[in-house]
Image 1 (cartoon, rainbow, N blue to C red):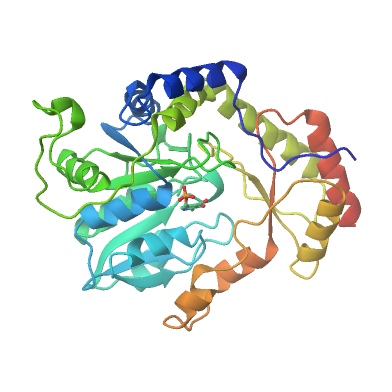
Image 2 (image 1 turned 180 degrees about the vertical axis):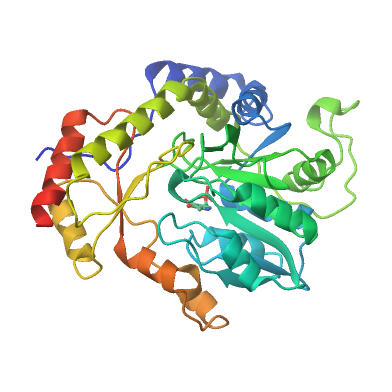
Length: 370
Ligand SMILES: Cc1ncc(COP(=O)(O)O)c(C=O)c1O
């Protein structure tokens, strides 16, 4: 079989010409494309406020800081996610409490939130795993309001994911997106924070750039500003923003193609009783097409796929509380997260993937799972 990549970056010649122009202009940060992308991402997500950041992890870190989360607080985190979801809260000194997830979607549930909730929990982070929007997000939002707990959305997988036509990231106090190379749009590294809370957003923007109180465009005298609190440098460059601007402008038809590709997989795999996948959900942006197979054969199957040049991955292979760093303080089992970790395989679903390639991957899986 000819090689099928796990993910494919959508950068074209025209984008490179624009990047070239930016590089030659001298405005490598704080430039025109950062503003253009932020405006475009505002339109795309429907959020009132958007700011670029150096990564999703940095964005989540800033959100927790701006919410005032500190060492006296606890943050509830799903046991199944990238370790960044827990790390970002840990940076503030807060304690982490983990909740188990739904076996089919890998997402946190209201039931698990209720089971684990106590008064020390000042924030809950939800993750829209593999692009599947958290179905109960409205109910979770209400629960958080009722219990005066902040809601943070980790949208690293979820560019284009929606619940009742509303883009995810708009249900919580703030949300962060990732533009890592495997993501739906990429700048190599990079992220964006969205929010509909002006006060919180202004604080995030301040923390993102050293705690400086005056935006570069608002300074009456260049170089004159004040710093009233500690801040970081979590900015993104303008040439990264250029790549994101061009990609987000042409993303809607690409998102449609991802969804079509997912339906093609379902069509090919529907008769194979040894492969499971989550039911088609409107609003899934299909960061990956995830399947679940018997845990006894999962790793061998992946080895075979690699030998046959079929790009694949695991999201994720280890529940966060099972990592050594977190295990010290969380010696407990999370049965669903554990099963999810041991059975999932992520398949490519990017827009350029041909029907023929999906057929080849599907046939390979069916043949090897007889
Ligand atoms: C769910 C989740 N959250 C956060 C991150 C961190 O994103 P970044 O690499 O942009 O910091 C990732 C990375 O892939 C992720 O999968």
